[in-house]
Length: 71
Image 1 (cartoon, rainbow, N blue to C red):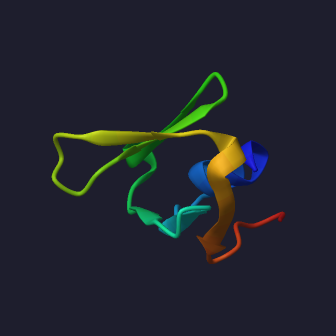
Image 2: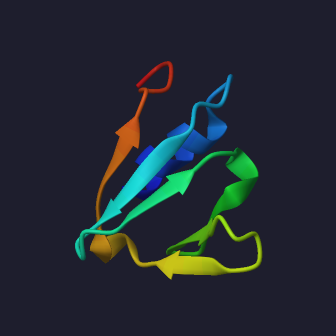
């Protein structure tokens, strides 16, 4: 799952995507600077611009959006 997120983050041009969790939550990544992979954790900035959520790959069910080139 981490490699799939990396592909979305590196896509040129960048296309927004969503991360779906096992709890049914959906986190939108509108810009590549709004998401980072740190060690084995995905960090997503929340829309309020002041907070972020840390997601374990074990709880990420999928990534949705336009498929990046070379996918």
